[in-house]
Image (cartoon, rainbow, N blue to C red; front, side, top):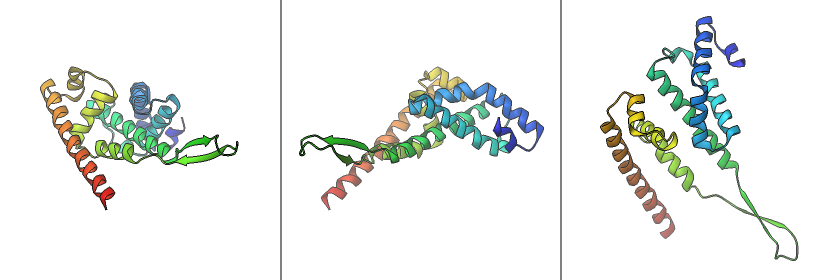
Length: 184
């Protein structure tokens, strides 16, 4: 593992190997839920572990819930970043057959709405964003989320409801902003 070359201490290397063996499949699932592509998900996990290797000093005990949360958040952010990069480069080509029998590529740019929605989710307060990701990306039940986060199931429901309100407000502001730009 090339990651081990980035870590200075033998204790850090042992901790990294433990984290890799313990959490790589969970991280793969989280990345897969965001990207829906096995190879891209593997890239996101690789990027998350690369970042982890550079910041081993901030990682606690491999068995701790805080470490697990950190790794899930790290891979989720890596997956979202990869998703954005991939979509920024993607364009759809449509060939128009009716023009004198020639295949002429016509390029349509994707709307920024997808990126705006991702920005809204990324900018949610962490306590709401993490619950949303566990609920809607990892498809966990409220009781599973409560156990994972060390909070009551009612708190999970409350954070989902409040998070939805924050998202609705942000979407409304976004919609209002786009409406003003069209009318100008």
